[in-house]
Length: 137
Image (tube, rainbow, N blue to C red; front, side, top):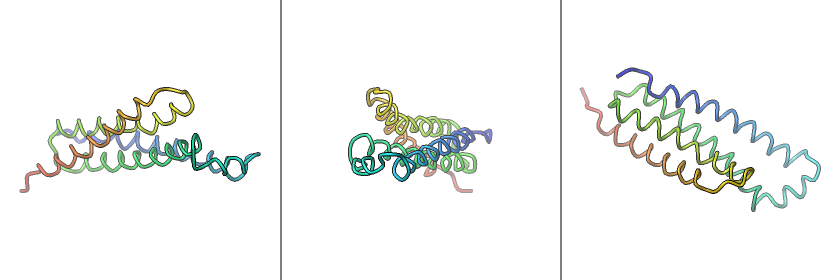
């Protein structure tokens, strides 16, 4: 197997993580420094503010998962076909937090959230299956 499956997961995971870190700093600014911060804090547990925090948390979580899965795909002797599927599904999992943001700011329907959620779950289960299939020498 070529030792490149997983590199995209690591690179994209780090890039998306940086984006969601910046988004987190924006949320901190809105909560602590922006004019009208009291109103923002009062509404932070419901509606759009809750959705924004949800996207931030899941964006960073799924980025870390992509970095971890990418590393495992690079290092473990997994079947190439299974590795490629895990890689693609994990990357598609990033659609969940991006879908939350697209709902929040663009008014798009929730479909990206569902596709991303199903993809990251499928990637996790497929990676577990692939690891269990590793033949011991």
